[in-house]
Amino acid sequence: MDNAITQLQQQETVKDIATTLDNLTAVQREALSQKEETPVHCRKMLNRRVIADKLSKSIAKYPEGLFRKNTSISQLNAALNVMDTSAIPDDLVNNPLSCGNLFKKAMSKDKTLTISSFKSVMATKKGITKVDTAALKTKLASLTEKITPDQKDAISINLSVIKNAFYFAPATDESEGKQLVTKDDLLDIFTDSLFIFPPVKKTSIEKMNAQINSQKEAGRALLKAILEITTDNAGLGPRS
Image 1: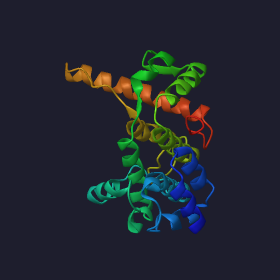
Image 2 (image 1 turned 180 degrees about the horizontal axis):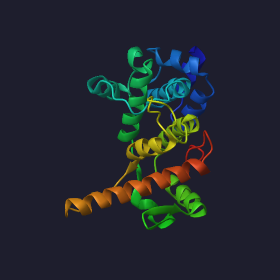
Image 3 (image 1 turned 90 degrees about the vertical axis):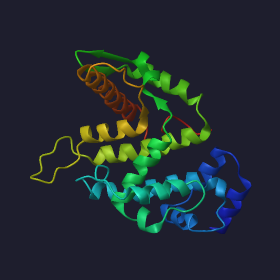
């Protein structure tokens, strides 16, 4: 830990900090998060990884709704307020449901991807949106050049967690009364947390609902395509 702290104290770039943190084990990252000597400028990236580490152990154990069930809003907001400067409270990060909710809220707070920026790679016909995979890869590469290294790091970690959750989720809910969260359910949940949607035009309720449904359908199709073309740890590409 002392060696890692010394390295982090001397590092300023997201790439160097990410490399140091990613070379540690999950246990080491958690221990590092509890050290007062851990540099403040590394806290946000470290907490991101601690949340991902905790969820990687819980996702397969909670198919009934790790990301769907709500927990204390005040507790989550308090944790969000200190994520950039100090450790996440133990009772929150060690509670799978609270940790899952914190992940969603943190991702929503760090939104950088606008659904409209992907318009050129999507085509909707009869309510079904299809994504041009080759064009999507090019678009993601272009967007990567425009966002900050920290935003890029956040997307990389977030997509890693989402891919893990998607892997363990069943395609359909064939349980008896458990109400498992399916892959489609996760697309709904994470689309809202990951993408920025344009405001809906004020018109009749029916037309507004149609616009919202169209946007969400596009978001689900886009997220599914992104998950299919990104590797487990790469996110939008190498961090810089």
